[in-house]
Amino acid sequence: MYRPYRLACLSTHPIQYQSPLFRLLATRPELDFKVFFLSDLSVRGARDPGFGVNVKWDVPLLEGYDHEFLPSFGARDRLSFWRPLAAHLFPDRTREFDALWVHGYAHHALLMAILMAHSRGIKVLLRGDSQLAGDPVDPLRRSLKRALIPRLFAMIDGFLTIGIRNRDYYLSYGVAPERIFMMPYAVDNAYFSARAAEAHPARENFRAALGLAPGRPVILYASKLQAHKRPRDLLEAHARLAPEMNPAPYLLFVGDGSERFALEARARELGAESIRFAGFRNQSELPAFYDLADVFVLPSGREPWGLVLNEVMNAARPVIVSDRVGAAPDLIEDGVNGFVYPVGDVDALSDRLARVLRDSERAAAMGRASLERVARYNYAADGEALVAALDSLIGDRARAAA
Image (tube, rainbow, N blue to C red; front, side, top):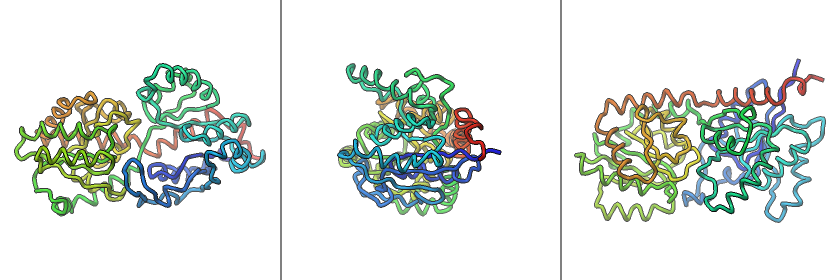
């Protein structure tokens, strides 16, 4: 007879993508699961620097799982908060966790928690989204990182990788393959597919509310309007595509950010009545946009994964991404459910858009392939991967019932 694994999860703040996974993990009999957060800012709502607007997500972030907010530890407290952090995460040997699962290592509290858990013999699991494309370009910084990261990774027992490029990142730092467990990024597939299906009967009304004429294809971008996301590439690709198609497809930007003013100015300069800006939309509003779209584009120059792809693929839509989007090798099969093009190559992006929009039957088939592919990236599979990692690293002897 064995007790469940006592698993603590440490995350900076509640995130709309993590909460459904935490709720599912809380139902697994193999786990005695608790989440610790460093901040409740996302629950209270605050200005998002990426979107440039106040954001408070309209989906539940804290329901259905045991959680606790740790005391606030600011920059001045970095040396003094060891003891209170330990008191919350590791109260005493009789109630100590079997494993600590941390999300990333960019915050000083995450690094200290890793060090404390390692020093106490508690297994440490790391899940992050790093990939080689994000390594420093500067030779000195790169050399410094190459010297320091292996020291950190030596304190990690298991690496929960979100995808192929994330796995390659760990391997490049000398992590042994047997310490790596695939736990791909996922969204609440049932939620997004159901909400897109619910939105479908009212699609034409929604189209009219947005001022879009019936029958014209819609190219959708839904993300922060920031320079590294390269929304300008999509705008220019649309401009090259528009003269070849009559009527021109709509280009719909959903989101906000520092690039919006420049994008709107460029759209006016082009005289493109087919380019629209819908602004920031909350989580529950997005499935209606996904249902409306004929193709979705994420042209980022830097994107560790791109969970918006998981979302829109649940609406059975083809997707086009740059080769810098981390999810590309996992979620996109070129020519089957979408296309991958060289980042910054506007002509290539325009060409891929034309291939999708000129053949509605092919586009529909690609959308079905997207839905089939994303179904494999789900929270249930992530739960299985997490338990498998704990089985491998801890086993039954540590859980023998008293």
